[in-house]
Amino acid sequence: MDRLDDALLEDILEKPYWIMDLLPKQVPPDAVGQYFAVEKYYLQKPRILEIRRKYLAILLKLNCYYDLAVSAYGTACWKENPELAELEEWLLTDAEAETLHVMVSGAESLLVLDFGDTYMTVYNPTEALLRLLKDLAASEGLFLWQPE
Image 1: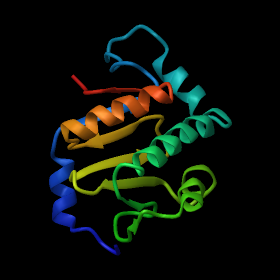
Image 2 (image 1 turned 90 degrees about the vertical axis):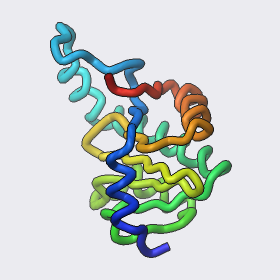
Image 3 (image 1 turned 30 degrees about the vertical axis):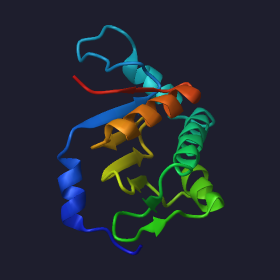
């Protein structure tokens, strides 16, 4: 798959979304804790690589149930069901990859992992996909929640 329709992507990005995260719920803007210090801590190596390994495991497991179209260099070029080693390289070692886009076939759902964040955004999940992602997130010690 070389391209996905830009209009479809734009439409999906307007749909409801969920957050897969280290935290079990959204941190309120007026929270008294150290959210930004904690985030900075987790964004440093080797902790960020540990987090990306969790997302890699989730994507590999998800690919057992759904075909995935993946783009690591913007949304102009997609690979359907990329080689597992290639997906691992994008997530763990490719310095040029900044954002991973994953289109879940049959669900019109999009997963977006910006490499400057510790969370992954899940746009427009079906109920079945949402249930599966909650289980997969839990299996890796992560949470899936909808922003307030």
